[in-house]
Amino acid sequence: MKRARFTPAAVVELEDAARRVDRARPGWGDKLNDEVLEALDRIEEYVEGWQTFDERGPERRFVLHRFPCIVVYVVTDTEIQITAVVYGGREPAYWRKRR
Image (cartoon, rainbow, N blue to C red; front, side, top):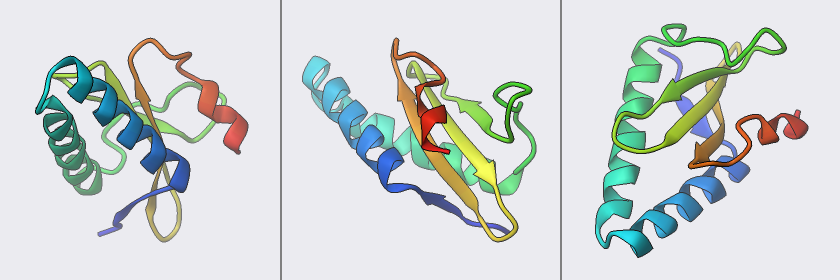
């Protein structure tokens, strides 16, 4: 089974999102982190089970249920790269510039 790995930019985005959530509702930043970890388990188990982001690239998206958040990932020959953690009302494809 391929393992998921966060890119440095995705780590920063998740940390920022958790801080933002925690400021609004103390303790909920941890809940966001937990839900992202659960999403990673599901992504690892069903790698191609989620839609590609769009027809322009190989990125797939996993939409969280309790938070307005999308985990964007790419499947490579050796791993699953978590390339972005898009939280809230951000432009949904801003991370494409990272390619």
